[in-house]
Length: 384
Image (cartoon, rainbow, N blue to C red; front, top):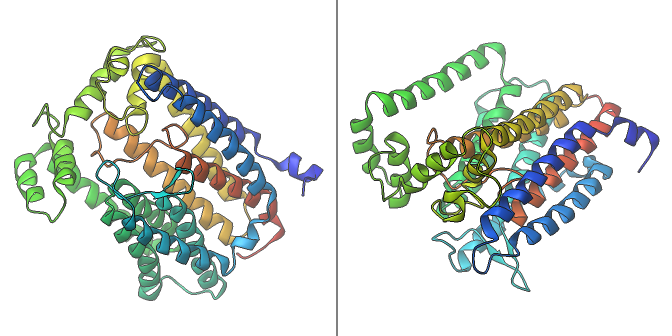
C-alpha cells in the first residue's frame, strides 16, 4: 500500500544510483550497437526493458515480501530447476544452451531467475534454524550446499561458468551470517588461503598452473579462459584476444575518453561482445577514466546502501536475503570489471544494470524492489 510511511522510508539514494547506472547503460549500448548491422535499435530495446523493469521494481517494493518468505520460495526453487533442465531442449546460442524461447521469439534465461530463489530458499532455511537457536553445523552446511549445488551443476552444464560461480558468491556471503566467531576465523583463513593460491599461480607458478589447468575435465574454451587469466600474453589471437583488446580500449580512453561513438576499438568492433560482457571497456574508451570512475562510484554507493539496509532490518530473513544480494552483485561487478582489466578470468558474466539483456535487467530490478519492500516492512517483525 502506498502510504506516507512508504514514501518517507523509501530509499531514494538506492533508486537514484540504479537509475543513473541505467542511463550510462543506455548510452554505452547505443554507442556499441548503433553502427552494427541489424543492431541499430538495440539501445531502444534496452530502454524499453529498463522502463518495464522499473515498473516491476516499484511493484515489488509495494508488494509485501513476506508472501515469498514461506513455502512459496521452495516452489519457486523447484520451478527454476525444471526450467534449467528445459533449456537443454532448445538450440544452443553462441555455444551455450542458456535460453528458453518464448512465443513471439522472445528469449528467457532461467539462470537469472534461479539466483532470486536460491537466495530466498537459503534465507528461509537459515531463518528457521535461527528461530530454533541452532548453531551452524554439518547438517546446515550440507542442506545449504545441496540447495546450491543442484542449480550450480545444471548451469555449469549449459555451460555458463559465470552464472554458476555467482551462486557460489551468493552462498559464501550468506553463510557468514550463520557462523560463530571461531567458525568465521576458519572461514576467513580458508578464503585467504584460496586467494593466496590464485595469486601464486598467476605470478610465481604460472607454467605449472597452466599445465595443471590443461588436465582439468573442463571444456576447451573454459580452459582457455583460465589460461588467459594466468598469462594474458600467451596467445594474442586466441583466447586472450578479448582481454587484450579490452585493455587497449580502456587504456586509449585516458582521462576523459574519446567521446560517444568515437572510440576506435568500440566502433571498429575490435572487442567482441562489447555490449554485454565487455561493455566496461567501451565505457573506459569513450568516457575515459572519469566515466569509468563515475560508474564504479555509483556501484559503490549502491552496495553501500544495500549494506545499510541490511543493518537496519529487524528480521533475520531480510538480513540474510540482502546479504545474499550483496554477495551476488559484488561478485558480478568485481568479476566483470576484473576480466575487462585482465585481473580476473573471463567467465561470460555480465555487468549488472549495464550489459545488454532483458532477463538480467528485469531480475536485478525485481531484486532491488524486494530489498525496498524489506526496508519498509521488516521493522514490523522481530526474528532475532
